[in-house]
Each structure stands twice: as structure tokens, then as C-alpha cells.
Length: 427
Ligand code: SDX
Image 1 (cartoon, protein in one colour):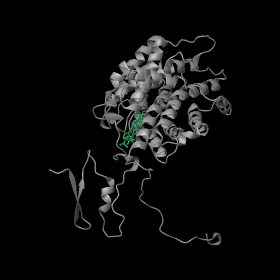
Image 2 (cartoon, helix red, strand yellow):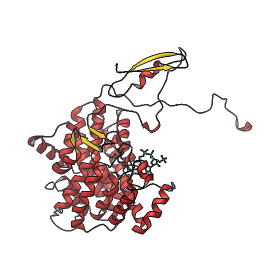
Image 3 (tube, rainbow, N blue to C red):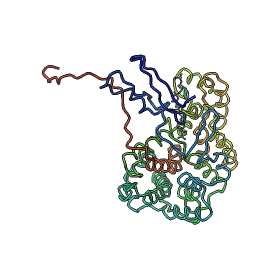
Image 4 (tube, helix red, strand yellow):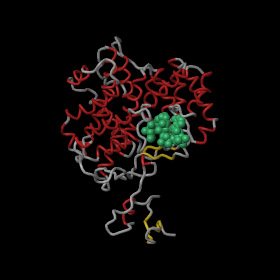
């Protein structure tokens, strides 16, 4: 049997053989199917890209039914257990695990770029104290684009890598400073003797102690959370980064667009929405009524469901285990009991089973972040920081892909036919 799809156009009786490769046909091959010579040809219509591959990628592999997630072939469970976020960021961007020399060089590069230009402090002062940190992060990335004008030279791999390092290095700094500004606390400068997660915790929470030492359990928990959030193939924010980057915009504004997409409550804003939902439920006795309201379509069970995973999100499993380690140190988050009961009830309810709705990465992560002392507004920022390495890896892969060009979908026009302008006197 040939790897082709034979299509008969019943409007003309003609048949066409379309090649099938990698489980897909090329949408462009549909254009030959016409009813007349001047016909544009057939398009595929796929709102929200439910069944459209936008690219070929070697970075992350997901199997939604089996609940598999691998970065460059390595299972997420093994990376969470044995790797560090910076090593995973290297893996995503370079395709291979670094040897000791490469890792040391990579860590040194990131560590020595954690400072931001002093002017940026003034830019931060321009915000109200209660400005949402994600809004600041989107603006910060765009502002960095005005600093590093050579970043526009996106065809130079060395330039790309140099700015990728800058973004990975500076995101924690500006995130922490946005938090400190909201509390009226002095900014804490990066401490290059600390690990990537440890330095971020110091910049966030150091008060007067001369040498802040992060709690090792919390430092490791944050590193694992960063690993789990680093990439996730062609999700909404990655598609935004690829889309904006396809116009040859620089990496800073491409990631500003990605951060803006991640900010949405259906995407990276979900972990903040989960906490608000758990707070609104208030206690386990109120869960049945809440579940009924969701089933009546009065709202979603935030932190549940996924476009790809129709099984338990493998990241949620790791996070659930991680929660025990964190709560050992911080004390149990009182909302955990509601979350566990909510999961138990939902997983046995036909409404969720039928729709294959399981906890996703956001269902438990917020409980950990809150227990670690992060305010809810910081939760999507805690998603964006590690996802920067995934966005950058995908952005670079797009630029190096000879099949890619500026992304510009078609449409099915449903508006008015041609009509003449109506002067005001006749409206
Ligand atoms: C992330 O894409 C990624 O990889 C994203 C991400 C990443 O790492 O980048 O994994 C991170 O964004 C995780 C998802 C976080 N979002 C949430 O937890 C918000 C709540 N979840 C939903 O909004 C929803 O499940 C989505 C957005 C995650 C997925 O939406 P889909 O794939 O478009 O599914 P759908 O909306 O078509 O839902 C199918 C059915 C619908 O019911 P019917 O119309 O068929 O009756 O399931 C229902 C939906 O109403 N449904 C839910 C639900 N999610 C879907 N019903 C109640 N609660 C939910 N959470």
C-alpha cells in the first residue's frame, strides 16, 4: 500500500493522490483540487489549530494519551529527578546534554548576565505598586529590545545565543525586582555565588540577612518546577513566539508576545486561577456544589484539562510528589485538602471522565508556590521564567528551518460582498 491519500472531488469527479509523510498531508497539496482553472483551490479549515501541525520540531515530544513528555528524547521524570534547570535549558537549546566543561561554561555565561542596566530600575518605578508582574514582564522584555539593538541580527547564530543567554539570565532579576517594587522593598542584586533558583529566591525574599542562604529543599523544589515548565512543544505561547519571530522580530519582542499569551488564564495564568478557585470553594463540603456549577457550564475546573493530554499530565504527577517535600518545610497549604478532594471527586465523575479531563501542570503548582511565599500574581511569572528557554529554543529552530517563512494563515471570508460607500445624509 502506498503512503498516499486518494481524494475524489465529487464536485468534478476528479481524483487526486496526495503524499502522506510523518502522518500528515501537506495542506498546500489541497490547492490543486479545483472546480475551475481560476479557482483558488481547496484550503483546510482548522480554527484554533486543533489538528494542524505548524512545524517540524525535534525539541519536545508529547504523547497525550500515554501521558508522555520528553525534552530532546529524555523523559521529564528522569530530568526532574537527576538534572537542573540550567542543564535542561542547555539541552533544549543545543539538543544534547552538556559535558562538564560545556555546563560550566553555560552556567558561567548565565550567571554573569543576571544584572540589568540600572536604567531599568527607573522603568520599574514608572509602575503603580500594584501593577501585575506579568504586565511588567511583557513590558520589560520589550524594553530590553530597545537596549540591545544588535539583537535584530537574528540570522547570526552567535548573536542569537548571546541574547538568549541574556534573557534566561535576566528574567529572574526583573521578576524579583517587580515583586520587590510592589512591596516597596529595596532591590536585591544578583548573588553570583548562588544557583539559578537560589539566586532568584534571594532576590525575592532576602531582607536584612547579609548572606541569604535559600532553604535547600525549596531551592531544589523550584529548580524541579523550572525543569517541568521549560518547554511543551507548540502550546499557545510558543506559537506566539514562533509567529512573531517569523517576521524576523528580535527575541526580546518575540518573547514579550509569548509572555502576553502565557498571561491568559487558560494558559499560564491557570495556576493563579486555581488558587482563586480553591479559595472561592473555601472548604471540602462546598466541593459537590462547585462541581455541579462547572457541569452546568458556570465556569471551568481550573487546572484541569489539556489540549494534548487526555490522561494525567506527567508534570502534575511530579509536582504532586514535590508538594510533600515543600510542605515538610513550609507547613501544609490549607488549600491542599480541598485540591486533593476536588481531584478525587472530579476523577470519578462522568462529566470529566467522558471529556478526559485530568489535572494539568497548573493544578498543584500554585499550592507549592503559595506555600513558598510567592503571591498569586507571581505565579504566571514563575511559569514564564523557565519557559523562556523553551520559547528561545523553538524560536531558534524556526529560524533555522528552511521550510519556515513569515507565518500568515488564510481565512474563510464570511463578510459582505462589494458595496458602495453610503454618504452620511443617506444613512
Ligand atoms: C497550560 O498547550 C499546552 O501545552 C499548555 C501548557 C504548557 O505547558 O504550555 O500545558 C500549560 O496551559 C495548561 C492548561 C492550563 N489551563 C487550565 O487549567 C484552564 C482550564 N482548562 C481549560 O480551559 C481547557 O482544558 C484547556 C484550555 C486547557 C484545553 O482546552 P481545549 O483543548 O480547547 O478543550 P475544550 O475547551 O474544547 O474542552 C473540551 C470539553 C468542553 O466541553 P464540551 O463543550 O465538549 O461540553 O471539555 C470541557 C469543555 O467545556 N472542559 C472543561 C475544562 N476543560 C475543558 N470543563 C470544565 N473544566 C475544565 N477545566
